[in-house]
Structure formats: structure tokens, C-alpha cells
Image (cartoon, rainbow, N blue to C red; front, side, top):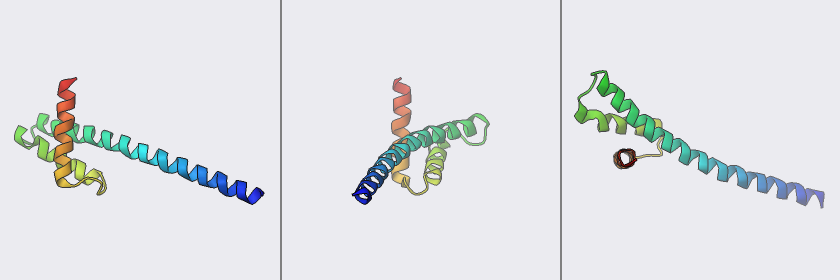
Length: 89
């Protein structure tokens, strides 16, 4: 009987870890989007790139830092959506 309780506790702990891990990924993707935009803006401010290239640089940053979680097309969509959300605040 004790063995069953141990297995049950381990399964519940595993489920909690998976659910918390998903939330962390979502949070970290939000942070990555903001960092990507800030990175592009900082490069523009320092005169490293023209204003037309800010989104492209942010897209590159997001794809590279996401470790394969975001594709090139998805990256530009996320960046544009995040910029819209920031502007609407």
C-alpha cells in the first residue's frame, strides 16, 4: 500500500512540474519578445542600424534566443503584435 502512495505522490509532483514548466516557457517567451524589441531599439539609438532594420534585428534576436521555439515568420508576427500592444498601453 505504501508503494502505491509513493507512486501517486511522484505522479502528482511530476504533473505539477510539467504544468509549472509550461507557464515558465510562456513567461520566458514574453520576456524574449520584449528583449528582442529593446535590442533592436538600442542598436538603432547607438547608430548601428537604420530604423528600417529594427524589426529585422529584433526578429533575428528572437529566433536565435528562443532555441528553436520560434520560426522566422512567427518571430516577426510576435514582434509586430508586441509593438502594437506596447503602443496601445
